[in-house]
Length: 124
Image 1 (cartoon, rainbow, N blue to C red):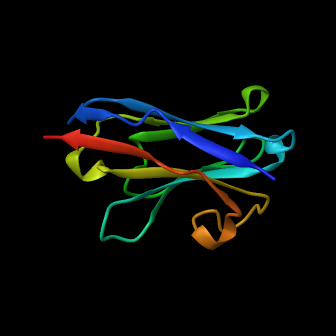
Image 2 (image 1 turned 180 degrees about the vertical axis):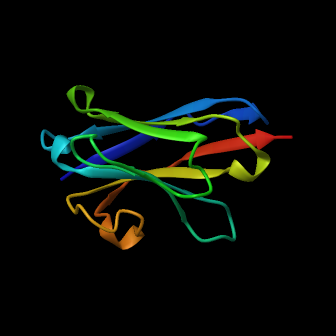
Image 3 (image 1 turned 90 degrees about the vertical axis):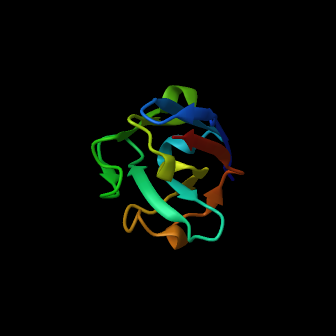
């Protein structure tokens, strides 16, 4: 069992940077791949980035590649999402999720555990 808690969401201005954290409980967290998703009200949940259990492999959605960076510190049971050059359209609730699967990490159905989300609001 893994419990995930996101933090770091805030109200920022366009062009600012923000780093989200996903803290996990559970001794086996290092065995899980982790993904970040976001959802704006009225829209479907969108995949952003994922990282393999070791951190050796990362995946990004085209919409955030080059602006967002995912990383992890398994010693601290934490995964990060560094977000740069934020835009108003990045406004959403951001979720992290964990899976023992090593494939299709851009698909929500692959993930077994989800956090409660953290709000990011980008003003123009």
